[in-house]
Amino acid sequence: MQWLRKNLVVIAGLLTLAYLILPNVVVMAFSFNKPNGRFNYAWQQFSLDAWKDPCGVADMCESLTLSLQLAAWATAGAVVLGTMIAFALVRYRFRARGAINSLIFLPMAMPEVVMAASLLTLFLNMGAELGFWTVLIAHIMFCLSFVVTAVKARVMSMDPRLEEAARDLYAGPVQTFLRVTLPIAAPGIAAGALLAFALSFDDFIITNFNAGSTVTFPMFVWGSAQRGTPVQINVIGTAMFVIAVLVVVAGQIVSNRRRKTATA
Image (cartoon, rainbow, N blue to C red; front, side, top):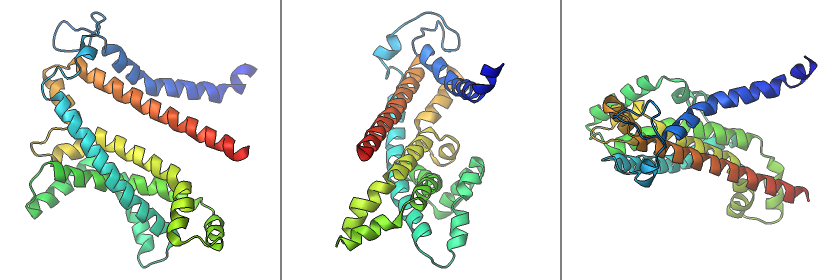
């Protein structure tokens, strides 16, 4: 009983982690399945056919490429705008700063279906043709708040004396930003970028409202589920999950090495 009390937090954390990872494990397992019919919902037999031909389903890789392009451009736009907004909110005092600071959280709190319908109304009133660009604008808009939040938290924890020391050593504004400010803010920017990429790639509701005839990977998965779920969808999901884990692990290793170097 005493052992259980001492390790209760660790046990709870491991159970929560297992609960979160379980769906990914199921996806990975069924990526090696060979179903008898169209639906990949029951295990039949082990097979590597889907891994040998991940693009064997018509239009699936095209939708995947489109989603990756949208996520990359949305991440770039949200990171640039979000980083500038975060620095402005933390470092400067201007009129309506408090209102902007509060309004920046609205996209995070607002239901996606409300935001999707509002954006659709805006695009239709402007006479914009629904497609790649309307989806990209929508993705940048709802990813922006998450980037601002991540970068703002990092900027608020920065020690301004480091930048003052750089200026005392005759570093110009550009040198100070590139050599001191940006490296310190980099973890927050990277966290915001990873979050924005995941949100953009994974989004369905806002994309479905504003995509027109454009089909992203989440929309393809939803459409395929009505007729049958190809095993290749599990293959792509497994690959994305493994890549995400490797990126996080690599980032953690680099961070630990830098910390050891700094303390050495």
